[in-house]
Length: 389
Ligand code: G3P
Ligand code: CA
Image (tube, rainbow, N blue to C red; front, side, top):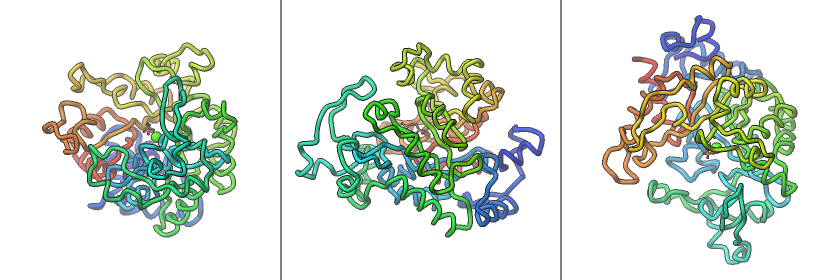
């Protein structure tokens, strides 16, 4: 396996160039000169930015969320312990008093024990979030002190019944706590820890007077992580959020892309008629490359599925994005049957694992630069298999 940098030095980004530049240990740990160099980078507080990352990069989605309630320090920690190259810490939303916390959505009824707190019963409400009516409890209606009284629970217990064992153990982390944790873990491990935070619903929150990007940028500056080679990749489904970041900080930036027929919510609000299908044309990708370094497409934009959920032929997105100078980190590979293409399901149990290694083989073969996964240990084994065959 190589890094982006070593692949380029080897004269190509093809699979042959990925082989032999480093050796993976059984746990997915990088051994040899690359690992040594990264440890030295960490000691000196520097780094080679995106080019120093292993390819394909394994990104712990919301931590190791296949094994622990998502967006907890325990989920982030386990992702690192498993060897994930980057931890998606976290999806970012604001509190009423302007702090930034890690939750996948502002609505927290499904990921915390807020429903068990009678003192917050009257905060339950219905709001229109990006055009959709959502009922529950919202981070923007709580102070940070109030949110800290809650505990995380498993979001999808039907698929992950074992994870409910951990319900109630961990609090909601703030982004500032994540930045400190990143530094502590980097020191402890002698290896630079990377994170991949995402702004959630930035137009919605700006409308509430809780703009995300300035607050995130301020924290990045405070911790010296706002530079081109800083180990923090910023992502958003709203291109204008990424454009805003491009004016505030120098971090690597990634535009997330949902289904081809969807429209980013900031486009809807501003009257921009373009859909994701427009953004993934060579013209659209070239424009993204003027302010971002990568895209994070849904896996279906890389290999579409047919009506029965089976994979069809890969699109030209990988080639087109690379031609525009963009890397691709698609989302999300999960081990359980319901989340896999039909080709790779084994039986119908919603909590049983399918042939996820088969799915990895198909997606890695397209030339993607990395992937978000809820199960980083599985992703690392799949990468090992991919680069050694
Ligand atoms: O950030 C990649 C992926 O996380 C985007 O999807 O909905 O899980 O935030 P989501
Ligand atoms: Ca995310």
